[in-house]
Image (cartoon, rainbow, N blue to C red; front, side):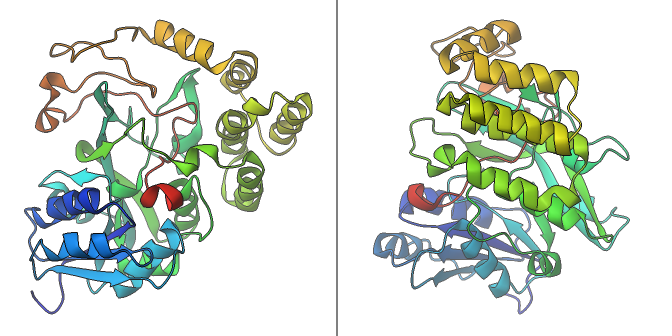
Length: 366
């Protein structure tokens, strides 16, 4: 392995040896071969160590932490270990398509600033369907915080960024580390803080380069993150986002977490928060009301009916619209990842249009 690789790949993991082995092999199979792959094991984990030892590639390096610190801490540790000028992040339950790094390095060559963040579309794979997201790329001069959070429909957003798509200068990832202790919205939080620096811009590759595996039955502590903690986080980043984005996050993302309380006090608190510090639009109010008024199962049925995705059962035929638990868009034609480039797609859950929920180990995923 050369003394200074072109790209360092950082993969945090814990207690998922089969999944992390799959992720590592997808990184080592890149058409860009001048790389190093750093797997940060978040605490003692003998099974993962054995599985990685079987891969037998000199470009793979394993760093085992003495105790659990969570996904952000593991990522930050890997970034500190990185030797390349670029670092690409990969979650242990995701995969890269073979040309992922090559396409991103090519896009980076056209950057007009010193520290570009290079992301991409991805293929969201669930047990029932697969589809491409985000629905669209950022528009010129569009605030990135609004691209990632504002909705144009009741049940989906248009923008999206997910950890496994991110490649950025190693120096930037060290300058702006991930927030340790934050269990949800880690990518949104990091992107917003990084974009506050004048030498940073976000570029998104139009083709899907990542397979995002969404196992709907896999335990995810991120899905039960307390809404109070997320509201505290949002208040902390308020100076970095626009009032429109603040309202959207409050009335969709945080409200989705808070609605199961069925508390009128919480309802009023979040509505007042959005109106006092944000600038809600018509869609924000409608989203807020449907989240609070409709029971989740009914909301999902209404969503599927409105979006025309009521089909269930086996794999659809090529080109057929699919139905999934998340807010889906169009099927990847033929079910093949390599055929997905340029496909319009939906985004994720009720918090759609924001960062995803990948991470490490079921107990420390976020």
